[in-house]
Length: 386
Image (cartoon, rainbow, N blue to C red; front, top):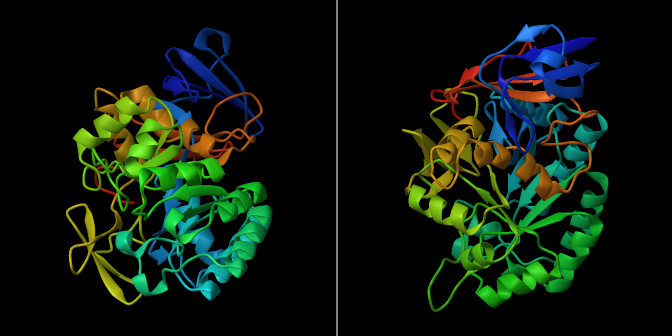
């Protein structure tokens, strides 16, 4: 089946093109051509066509959290909730939990990959090898240093999953463990850490390539004792950014964007609320409350974000150091680059699956056009949370 999509601006992962058409054959991109050369369009759309959005930190969605009870059906439902919000692929994310819970989620993830669950890119294990001084909403009682059994479990998972991201604190691991994870194929991301600059740089030298939710739950930019934030902004590691205007002040986002012309990508850090009207949920026996775009524990601690990638794109696009092209890249090609995948994620080029995110002109509505089937629901980013 051949489709020709025209009428919208088309972002290919790097550049934004006007008066162009996207040719799709049998569910894959065949060509990106000037509209006059593509033949009669089979569908005219307005707004922006982009590669399918990617979210590398999604703790839940559709009323479900990634936890010790997660199975393939739950991962499928969480991925589907995000696809309903215009996001083509996610890394379902387990925050600090028990070894048994980690094993359960890994097994579910391996099976989800085997079944080719739509939207499942792999897993993100955020903890438990963190620094309790920067625990955020993680359960301090479950945070612990990495042991040999943990390393074996993670390395085995990295070899069996399409992608595995592991967030850890340099204080909780040895450089040799980071190197082993990297050699097994895991993406090692530093986060929930109070490390000094030299500790962060040592971890990056050992094989870490990323930082988790820049500015949040990490040592800051002290002028005499620079921490993890300073290591990221002065280095070349990738870093996720929660662009909700709550986790990071717009002024700090501008500083980061100016310091790092490349390497930053958008994440939602969303919870089970994504794609639902829920106002509260349970997190390991603690109540998370949703109010005015903010998720908090009872004591006011931020507990994930009430955010969609479309909302995040709109915020970055409005900043002088951001702009539309960079904002779209941060939700697509920059995120794909973190995973190092060679299967066309985050870009539009001949041969890649036609998983597209369609945005309206004011970046408030996102819907998914998936491998030839665009019969997906659209949602308003201004009124739907993730």
